[in-house]
Length: 333
Image (cartoon, rainbow, N blue to C red; front, side):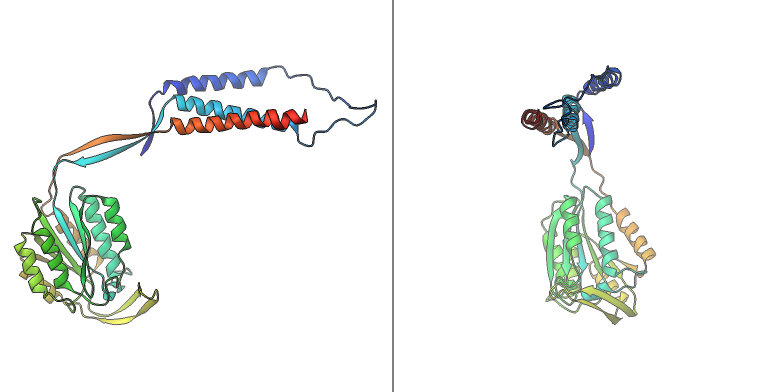
């Protein structure tokens, strides 16, 4: 978003007016002022309870502000925003994100698995603006959080609000994959992608992960499984969304890459190991460079006029200046 002027010549005119006024006030002859005592000779000089000269300067200041704003308003100020509309449909991408408590493990170079997973999704969405992206979360159950959308503002808000244990304690991998596959069956997109981001074994849900992976393959979607995390004892830290209590401790991570590789194989997909930030970066690059769907786009200009708002301020300044002169200074003098 930027500021522009439809009639910039009025800015040059305004600058000349301001310079002329400055020169005139700077070099004009000062008026002769003398004190006029009231009452008998030798009496006290009249003192106003409010400094009249200060009020006079303040009204001049208001009038000066009004003049400057009026000249700016005449120049036609507008806020300009450029928006891009994609003319060709991109891919439909479903991210199935594990939100179980184990994803809060801090074994990704000081960051949690959950945070790095969400960062990967956010980067992917930013680099592929014409792809419609959907969010599916898995915990004790699975849920479609956001259907495929190209609205990156709505997408970012929902991704940011997704919290650990939002869907309970558990990892319903099969359910999450089945949800994505069902929604992709009737998709008319030229390319369909399902990305599973998880750290563990399936231990919840009514759908077996192999069944869910098979459904993904039958939907015609490209399938990626990204295994995030390490094995062994790892620190855990998260806030329970139901109780609001912070939970910390050490737990035994059962990260099983072979099980995740089998799920990827069942869905005709690819398994990527992401046991470090570097490995996750490599996984991201492979996914992002696979099957890019370039499309035509058109950028158009949206403007918002500011002149009317400035004119309101001009009227307020003039009314305030006149009011001070008529009602306050007039009563004093």
